[in-house]
Image (cartoon, rainbow, N blue to C red; front, side):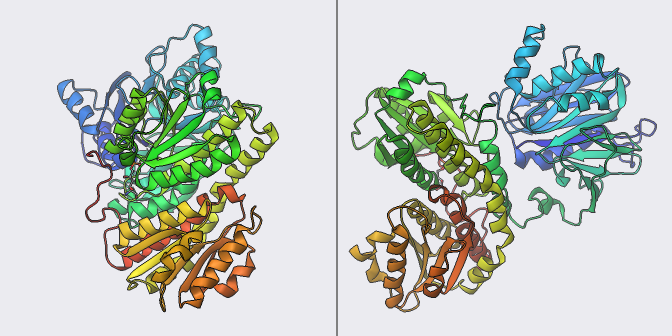
Length: 629
Ligand code: M6R
């Protein structure tokens, strides 16, 4: 998830900095990037244009690095320009990979948010035609292609060139381009990634969200899917990818600037809970080939070694370790490889049995958690192969691992993890299915069916979010509860643990998660009159009649006075009579259920904590990334 800003002012009045339409492009871009930096901060860059001159500055690291660069080496302030703050996907966070990227002639600059899925075949084609690339990014492919098409088949028309290029691209993208031969405009396109136009007086703006231009205008147009927009100082013209004139959705921004960064939500946590459909979708994106087979390009471990793996150990901490527990259920079931899950800080002090057929899978949002990093280093010393499931491109854990499977959740700002958890589980499923495919453990059709079900998950999460009021109102009514218990079984067990952790972290309420079957071995002694107990109920369509066993557990705690709250599959009407409250989630194969059942528990904890007046983005005593042992 990157931040994007574009600006076109009026050349005539540009000397009067600050006047509407006459702003200095560079100032507008830098202010927009400052507001967008929460979207990605591993590199930043700007391109400005004035009187046929294109000027570019870009730098790895925070925006302040580009500011320092501009101070040291001043650039054209410009009346037209584009700016980008990057959250790396293809290619590490380096100066060269930072946006903007240029065409071969150095006359055109492009910035991009998203993932161009077919970039490697396009790149190979361009290389064969003699094009030289500087970066490892998918974006540079779009830049080189756009420059070429502009010069040839588009006849020097940037809008037409964009139209021809986007029709060759697959995946998700917002692209912004400027060209010195058409110095009065910025042309942009969007598919599956956001793009908003800010309407000014003698000036117009573009942003990946309204926070990019909220200081300058509140009149905005949201582009629809597969549209191209050309902005000049006085005009905004929209067409579809088919070239036919089109319209976006006009709206007025009544949020304040800080709400704008949070997408209109009161907190980053709420925003990130709502980002989850996209986080899952983006993590799935570009990981199958044209025939529907899984293709995990980043997993650069020789196939023979992956086939020879005799044991997997998942190492992680906190929420990431719960994602690892889901991975265990899925990988063992699909691949028939034994999987252990271990808290990273326990792992290396217990003298684990590791050899060169052991595959270590570390799971980390930040890629910087010291406990996990030390465990990875230890496992490497013992001769194991290491794969990292990570959300932060270029961070230490993936850098030190043999291979990486990135989750594409975008930056997670709130300290308590939400969208990264769902993205980690999604990536773990992909890894499991990939190993099953490689080792011939499942039929192609079986894998394809599960992938099809995974692709339906984002829409199902959206449905849960649309019905969030029920769980919110329960949360508000329970703000004085001193303790809440969570029960689950099979893949519902890590969900219960995560539900309890969220409540502890955010609302400072005593909460425990248990495997439902363990209840009678001790924890049931905690149950007394009125004790709230959340139960994650397995699908009635699952194997091993776990559903009826969990229903029995519900009855056992109810008989002792518990207030039972269930999360169950839509249509599972059996649980109604045993529940004070039921949250139904859409039907999905039992193994994929954590991607849905977790969401109401996140909303519950977040709402309850807000009701208590706590800061859900920065809970007490916690740090986003724990970089000490
Ligand atoms: O960045 P990581 O995924 O490695 O972080 C691991 C844990 O510190 C993290 O999940 C922590 O438990 C969060 N506070 C959970 O909300």
